[in-house]
Every structure is written in C-alpha cells, then in structure tokens.
Amino acid sequence: GLHVAADSPGMASSPPPASGGTRAERLGEPLLGRLERLSDVSMVVAVELGRTTMLVKELLNLRAGSLVELDRQVGSPVDVLVNGTPLARGEVVVVDDELGVRLTEILGAEEE
Image (cartoon, rainbow, N blue to C red):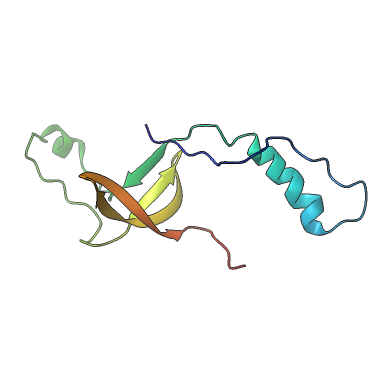
C-alpha cells in the first residue's frame, strides 16, 4: 500500500525556550518535534478522478461496461486526498506501466 512518512534523523522534541527566543523558536520547534513523532504513521492517500451524483435506481442499473460520467474535463487535475482531506492536485502520469500522480499544486500552501 501507499503510505506517507517523513524522513527525519531524530524523533526527540526539544523543550521550548524558558523565555525570549524568536517566535519560530517558541512555536515552531516544539511543534516540529511533536510532528516528527508521527512521521512513521501510515495514512491513506487516495486520488480522486472526479465525482457524480446518481439516483438509487441508476446505481441499481449499473453493469459491467456501464458508463459513468464525471464532473471533470479531459486533462483536468485530479485531487490527492490524505485520510479524506484534500492535500494537493496533480496530473495523472504513467511510470513503468503503472499509474502515478505528478503533483502540480499543494493546497493551502502559503507564499514564504
């Protein structure tokens, strides 16, 4: 299965500075240390090609070979979901006869 894990050399969290320090030192380092503890946790990564809404009677009529139209145009980016939460968008690619997704946009990423 596909899982997400961050490679990090150490898992120990450094304690927050007693006083002073920059805002990043006060807020960022302890948070990063806590997040590093989760780096080996497996998460479900799904790629959503598109969606549609169907009536129950339409679902009951589905057979092998039935066509289900989706809400996306050809060439539209697919959504990458982590545990059901949208994380990124990308394009479908073929790598050694297997499908993959090349990420083109990270959702919620702020300019630094």
